Length: 375
Image (cartoon, rainbow, N blue to C red):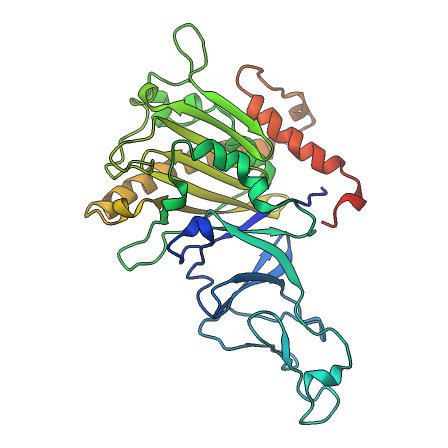
């Protein structure tokens, strides 16, 4: 697959304005955090300038990992194999004994580029995005269909990450024994399955999402990277338990008129409901394994409530139940794909426009010529 767009890699949670460039405990001040993405070793670094940078985690001299373990409070990156040192902006500052001289300097490399190789990256929505090929369009232009749509009802620029009583970000990590695309086909968005897979939805008189005449009770959005549907909250009051916290809408005293289940292609899912939005990063590990990272965001007024931890735990339990129910179906689809008969499956035109659109985006990237991107 040839894709030269923006991938989501990890969640950031430390900055008070996560949608304007947040940084997490994982990448705190003067901190390094090595990680693998698409089987490629990368490292996220936050220096004293509070800026997050992502580098290929490779020392160009010896080809060894530059960073082996996470670290914080660092003044430099000291490599393990031959002792090269880098500042936290990826510049080589010391190459000891390079020419045999105990007092040699970086200048003694005589023009050899010893700096770490930076990966194009941006932080938005509490998430670090990387563009491995380097040719993706401007990140804000890429995200504009999603932001324009959901910001009509949600104050996304004012939301903060959920934290526990010890002030640690409530990041949830899970795995699914399925390909990332198999996972996304459920999330992006397989609407009809709700009524059969999930106990909460089975109990609701409002699901499947049609009225008595069979008309849709949801609105679809397919625009660039945006794959989503919205539902009017007055029509889904019997489906979702209320979250007793200030609204994530523009007026914290009034719940938004709609909720959304949204996907930002290729690997970010963002449900938005009443008091919170949920960031869900879908990270490919192998052909049959996907790693997930989840974190919910609320308004500051919600985080300050005495009942926040209680309500957040209730939301966590609800989403965990949804995840475990979906996991059974997603892994069953992955297992079924071993059969040639699986290829008979088809879309339901009434329900699966979003599902079909997502797969068209995948197919466009698969059909891209190798020269169109470097990934």
